[in-house]
Amino acid sequence: MRPVIFVVDDDPAIARLLRYTLEAENFQIHTFQSAAQVLSQTARPHLFLLDRSLPDMDGLELCSQLRRSRLWADVPAIFVSGRSSESDRVEGLRLADDYIAKPFSPVELVTRVQAVLRCAKQHGKGCLAPPPNARLAPQSDEPAHPRSWPYPASLAPHNSNA
Image 1 (cartoon, one colour):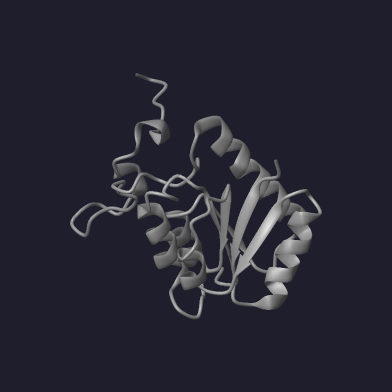
Image 2: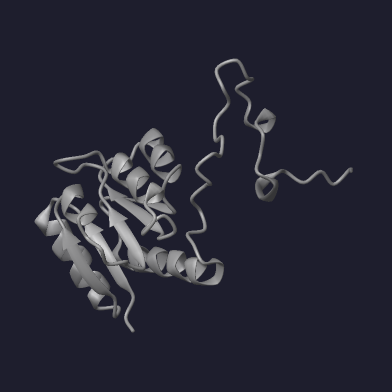
């Protein structure tokens, strides 16, 4: 069975490029131009590719709704977006499993899709998205230095002197 990917992008040219690139690699692609279209679905894809700028909802909000959904909470998501500043990428990675900035290399796109799907298959969920209650930045009264933040155990720096 071919892996199913839901592409959510309001730009028909980008949607066609994603479809063409991924179908050439034997993925089954369903495209949607709005958040409402994808949220009305009852099918379960293997992966979501999401734009950050949709006509009816910010892509971050869409991803947040997908993460809270009983049907799709564990389906991995990758942002494919023209919003490529560091803060845009960091915001996206707080919810999604990966973030690809437009313009993108088709080869890199396919490789990242395959990597996220491989990780999801091994672990039963997306691999890079943090748990919903994870704290990824210090609170306003905490020191700003990253080493002082509470790390998840899997990301904690290892002290070789311990």
